[in-house]
Image (tube, rainbow over all chains, first blue to last red; front, side, top):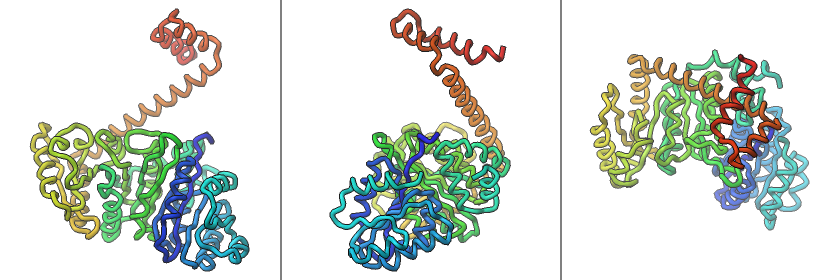
Length: 133
Length: 319
């Protein structure tokens, strides 16, 4: 019964960054779009993010970061996923991420980066359109 | 992925396969049932502990602390935590993992969150089968954390050997303690947040309620004070849990509960299958549609028609 399939998303904040207002608002928007959102809280290591994503069977990981450590943490998460043989989880990011950094993050396997000013609707629609169920 | 791969993966302790199988169970995939059929004989070993109580009464924190305590006692742990799905969008915010971060990289702990997906009773439809596959996976103790419950979500007692009901100081007067429902399913009461004012009063109210219980019981539910922040009372609670399990075994209650559970489960599966079969057979049948119109027009009554249709479509081949 594929009708009972639901998009499951892990919303995670990797690294040392205490600002989770944005992550919570995005989590709420995804919930309101009918998705099951697993929110893990602050200060996650890449290992914790990947473990939670795999155990929870999510289709998408949303990473929120405002600390500036995205160039180190995002690619590390992609490496760990690759080491686990995972290639069917959509990974997106958001937060304060300079334009110049985006090409390399995408090269590392992050599908999309949502900066300030992105509407919640854009994020919801992007996930719905690109997730592999 | 094949059923054999899934089953072998789970039995060999590969958590990726366990996670995959739980997703299949939640999505009511046919593959899940085939895997459950093969895994069934490997289940029945885990000690299943239900944790229920009002929202914000510290269930997740308590489970986290108990997990730490039982890890010290060399037990492996599974956790199934249920949060409500929206009745409007079907979406859910599953936040129980937030409290469980300290165990997130422990290989001997497996945590899975799920939304109720429209199911009432405090759990999700998939919860019981999920507990079963974590059992087959080999975890010693499985915690089942219900949604924040009100008064009558008592389904957890059907799948747990021991139910902990949590409460906090200052939550309602002594009348709340003598109402029917959730207060009756506890094997152990926990008054959490013991540093809040009114904790002792809460313990006294629950004890008074227990004094009035007319049932002759060999196990009187103890009322324990805990503090999930400081860890006070957690070791005592873990001791009580082990004591309760021993009591269930020694008194024959464990066996009795197992029989009861199997009876209820068999009945519920049969009911489900019969309903499925009947609706499949009636689907699109002209006499079915015609009967509905006759009932709506008050030319026939639904009671007689139901019996006729069941006799005709469900039992005709059997006779």
